[in-house]
Image (cartoon, rainbow, N blue to C red; front, side):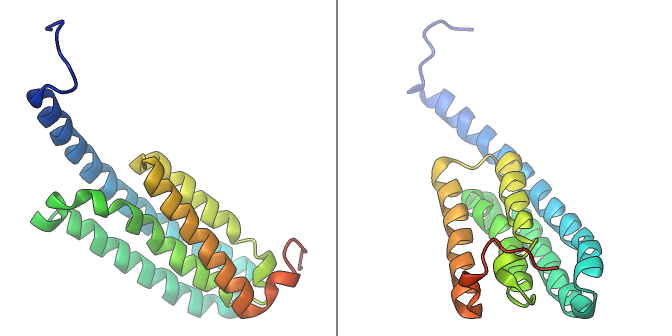
Length: 165
């Protein structure tokens, strides 16, 4: 190994970029698969918490799974191979959006137990995809924005933090 290797070395930069692309595409596919599996397993929680809305929640979760499957497919295309960096954030935003929809239609969205799901999505995708700081801020910012929209839309900002059984 040469002692004079520098980050500015063109060969090093090319090797780093190639490795980064390979890793990001691979972990992007894994994140899509996790989103698909975990979204479907969330139906168990739906069954016990909101049995009367189970059909709607299954439909929403199924659409989320289809979208995650499309993201998985995009990773295998020439477009996905070229623009792999732009696929990481939408992978997380897909289940976040659909879980937000589930939260919005629950009787008390301001104190929904599903907010824990958002945290799990953020943590899982951050660990698997290894977001950079900008990507993390975008994902968390979108969650906060969606949370604010749901609370204002449903008028649930007055019930935040109250338990509803």
